[in-house]
View 1: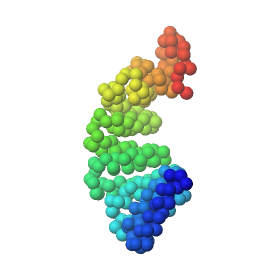
View 2: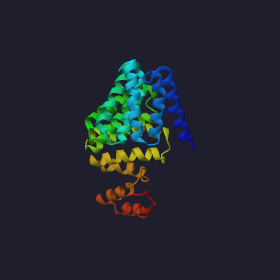
View 3: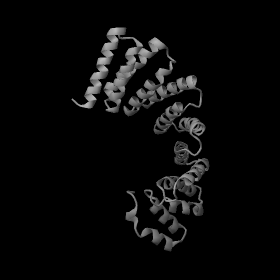
View 4: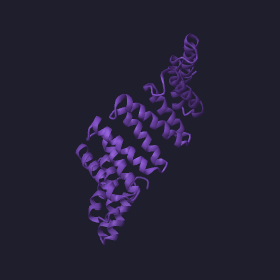
Amino acid sequence: MGEIDNARDFFQQSMQTFGDLFGPEHPNVALPLGNLASLELQQKNLDAARPLYEKNIRLIEQQLGAQHPSLANPLINLSEVLRLSDEPVPAVDLLRRASAILESVHGPMHPRNAQCLYLLAHILKSSQRHEEALEVMARELAIVEHTEGPESDSFIISRQQRGDLLASLQRADEAAPPLERALALVRQKYATDSPQVAAVSASLAMVRLMQGQWQAAEPLLVAAISRPGMRQVLVALYEKTGQADKAAQYRVNPASDPAD
């Protein structure tokens, strides 16, 4: 019997023991029940994890109330089960509820709420609910800046993701400021030829192209040359602006790019 099976047996036995001692609806049963649900989620056994989380939530609600802070984690975890099951609408509802609980217990700037909002924004974006995603991103960004500081990797990533979403919506003028700040921060933290600088440079380069700012886009594309597709974009820019020599220079070794 492997470690996973041993852990599953342990949690099931704990549930049985607590149920015999306190009754099957006692909140003490919720702890091993939640642990078993998380084990099944980790193993991607979604059909097994879902009813376990649902029962876990029901037990906590019955015994401790619908706004108890211990509900936040199982709500977030059940939302992940639903996301993986391609059920984004109820997943969003669960995350909104978890966020409200966390905010009521810890205040609006708690880091756990930032994690919850990050997950919520991801599902909203994937569901094409872009305006809602942008609003949630703004809230998450404010918490990350408050708790981790404006130079943290989390803050930089959040700014870049917000800029990328705005750019994908053809809102280049709105996308530019968060990406500009993200690039300034990442240049302070990492070497010029680092993957982090290349990633943000690529995002901002595409925004500059959308804005028709060819000269501003050129150095960004050079900095992002290691990113997929950036060499071809740079060559196309040189060809468009009549710089055949430079286009030829960067066309020399296109196979050195990552898979495009």
